[in-house]
Length: 186
Image (cartoon, rainbow, N blue to C red; front, side, top):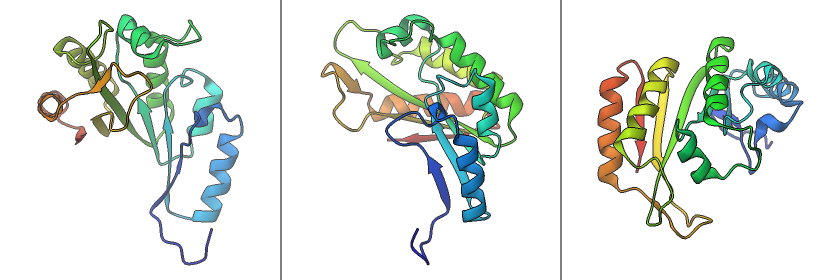
């Protein structure tokens, strides 16, 4: 790091899942010594949060930004086509609850909304929004970030949702989650 560089936080993210690194807790501790009082954040896809060692590695963070794009197994399977068939929505939700119970840092949940012109199931509907919001009510995160894709996706039939949909989701979630800051990114 260059002397005199200004920044407000250090974020562990990258092109891979940071919680796969077994020494993540050590790296966070080292980073805290180097950067002082600045915040340390971790962005995770939430797939490994049901592992105790992953939770231990996250205890020294200031904020964990975790994904929760759907709470329905059929939508999850179609949107993500997970290689590991044991990975499912129930496991992710249990992991998020475990995280919330065991760390003192802020929790932010990130929800990516998608639609499709093919017959795959997505979270672009009222039922999914209600189900996701229900789980968010249980988790009581400090923040919820809602957004859609901006770049060209890997599959050409996956599309971004429109601003109107995100606005409606934002209004609904703010009403149902009065203690949570809901941030739409359009």
